[in-house]
Image (cartoon, rainbow, N blue to C red; front, side, top):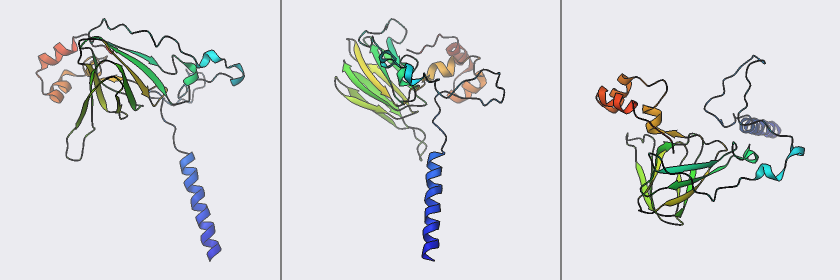
Length: 226
């Protein structure tokens, strides 16, 4: 009987191990539609890999993050992303990096990264930052917010709406680490009011409790991601 119990225990461990190994991989794009047509356009969840024999040191190098991004835009900020698109050696490694430049009173507007947690370090200046939780058990969405100075670090959990705002009258710079080679960005205002084709005015009027005329005016604006 003891031997049977031991064998059953081993079988359980094997199934448990298989379950861990057999889980689906994390998605690296918004969607990856299955196809049985080998002649159709083919994409992979990530990027195709170079033969390791052909790898060069340059595949792991990105230069220029010391240069400030152009903040001459509506939100007065600029994000310089270093993902697997810009640095091929990041492919499959699950990380990326960004430099964020802020003009005085510049804003990195409320947005989410659907595939990454972000850890932000202030290099220069003073930033007011925050994120909002998903719906809590009591129905609330709690705001966590702080004023960060040079050397301060703040974490924005994966998928949650967050922002950074330069509250100083001098430029500010931050470096963000992201836990995906392709974190994705959904800028809330642009996604909601700048979708193409537009989201129905009736839907947005009801969702935001706004007059239809105001919704149409918002949809007519030029929305941008920094």
